[in-house]
Structure formats: C-alpha cells, structure tokens
Length: 461
Image 1 (cartoon, rainbow, N blue to C red):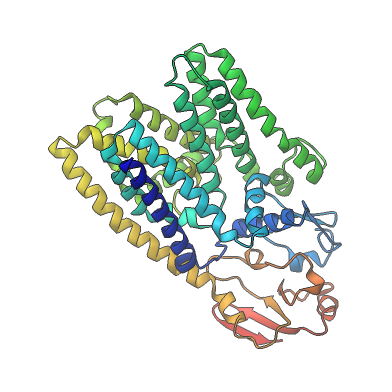
Image 2 (cartoon, rainbow, N blue to C red):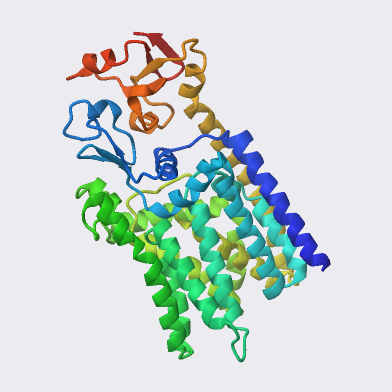
C-alpha cells in the first residue's frame, strides 16, 4: 500500500512538472508548423468540421500564395491538415474544454503511472524511484510531453497495450485475457490513427510471441480489434482526399520524395544522427554496453531492446529527415529504453563497473539535459519574436505581412490564421506584391497593415 501511494505521488508530481515546462519553458507555443497543424485540426473537429471551405483555399487560386500554411493541404477550396486524425480528435476535447495545454501532459502522466507500476511489478519496488528520476532528469522527455506534438499520446497508447499484453502472460488458466487482447488490438489500432508507422514494432512483437506460443485465437482477436479501429482511416481518407487508400499526407506530398519509403545510404546517415541524438538526450543509454558485451543475460532486457531496435529499423526505412529536436521519431518507444536502462542497473549494480557507470550516466544526463533545455528555451524565445512584436501594436485590427520567417521557422510556419479569414482581427499574410495582393488588402479596409522582418522589425506599410 505504501508503494502504491508513492507511485501515485510521483505520478502527480510528474504532471506538475509537465505543466510547469509547458507554461514557463515552452510558454504555450506551438513550436513548429506541424504542431500548429494539429491545433488547427483539433479546432476544426471541435466545431464538427473535417476541413474549412473558402475559394482562397485552392492552390490554383492566385491569392492562395499569401495564406499558404505549413502542413496544410489546400485543394479545391478546402483546407485540411495533412496529418492523421487520431491525435487531433483527442486534442479537440481540450479545445472544447479550453484546455488544449492539458491533453498531452495528461497522456504523459498516464505513461509515467504505467511505467512506475510496471517497474514495481516486474523489476522491483526499489527501482520505482530510480525510474522516476530517470524520467525527471531527462529534459527531452519533459519537453516532448509538454508540447502539442502527437508523440505523447502514441507513447501512452503503445505502452498501455504492452502492459495489457504483459498481464495476459501471467494468467494460467487465462481469465479475461481475451478481453485484454481485444483491448490491445484497439489500442494499437488507435495508435495507427495517430501515427501511421509507430504501431508496427509492438504489433509485430506481439504477433510473433502469440505465434511462438501457438495462441492463434489470441492473435486473431488482436488483429480483428486492430482492423476494426484502423479502418477509420479509410472513411477519413475518402472524405478528405476522395480516395480511401490515399492519405492526406500523401495527397499533400503530390509525389514528393519525402513521402516515399526505402533504404539508401541517406537512411543510414540519418539513422546514425538519430541514434546519436538518443545518446545525447538520454546518456544512461550507454550503460547498456555493460550488458551487451555479456550477451544479454536477462530475457526482459532482450524484450525492451528488441522493441526499441524495431522502431529504429522502421524509421531506417522512413528516414527522409533527421526530424529534431532530439530523437523525436523514437520517442514513442522511449519507455522501453528507460526500462532497459533500469534493468541494466539492476543487473550490474553489484559490480564496481556498474556502480561507476551509473554515477557517470546520471551526471551525463544532468549535464546534457541542462544543455538541451537551455538550447530549446533559447530557440523558443527566438521563434516567438513575431508574437512579441505584434503584442506591442495598439490597434486591435491588424494585418501582418511576413517578409521573413523567424529563427529557423519559414513564413508558412507562421501563417496561423483563424478559420474565418474575413472576420479575423489579426491576419498573417506572406508579403509578396504579386497578383491580387492589393485587392486582398482592400478586402480589410479597417485593418492597419504592418510589415514584419526578423528580428524584431515591425513597420507600418
């Protein structure tokens, strides 16, 4: 009972940490066009819309160049996000409650609770606090959970599916295991609605384990439940792109190489960058070398490393960008990396090399996390330059013409307009004195027009 109370206390403390990071370090800022696209999608869904309609939302329209936004597909007078609907549907609940900032931290908190509970059951009570400190000292984990990105929900659903499946292994004879397997399939199916690829490693591992144990019925239940949930993709795709098999992301790419999958020398180069970022974001990863040279003595350690290695393999095939900050593409499987480190500590703590390695790993985690947090805080501050200068304008109705982007953010990243352009009090447009530009400005006769240029320059037109 005392350990359960400790787990609950540490979990709630993590929630407080996530919220502090969101409000004081991230400052509620959508730190990329991708995050802004999720917010757009969530706000549309909150109003019962899958897309927005307006003649200006058509790439063939000359005026579209002034409102074209990152991660948005403008086709035939309809604007919609290029991303899967799963995360936006969850985020829309926060939109309805006016608490979008709370959704990701809650899923992060769920992950922490499941992780600590799993450690207590499978590794030992004495390692619960150790696990929590590894989470707390990892700035990459805190920043990822506190953002508007979709990785946090994916991580929570994937790890919940793993924990549910793990519980079925203890039951002999199985009681309620069929329902747990159905729940596993549903969770993995919903993961596919959040991110297209991240469910594959865990599904593959579970399917292999069920086949190895000749649990054909269990495998069928998982696959049927997964298929039931994943078929929502087809209805969503059909409604947006007109083709059940054509995703919004592929439709937006229009044959761009970034939408393709394959292996080349670039794949290995990008994967090497991502793995280096894993070590930088979570230096205790190096402790795994203490066990690897001894041939992986613990079955659980093999499981954790296998699952993390599988997500690396999946994104080796899909490696068209390093995708910072940090090892973002692997963050959904970060709990397994944390478990691998905790298991390694359990196996090596009686050895001198293990004790020294643990102290060095924690020191490295503190130093690297401090550097990472400072770098991210600086980056966010520079990117919010536009937000700060616009706040100094006395007029309530204004048009901001973007002559440049901000720090490492291009102009389309900053085109963040409300759904109804024509009644917007603040409107952001790309500054390009081309076809129809003057007529577009005249559509807003009561707005004062300013030209923005990074850094900090905002002048009346």
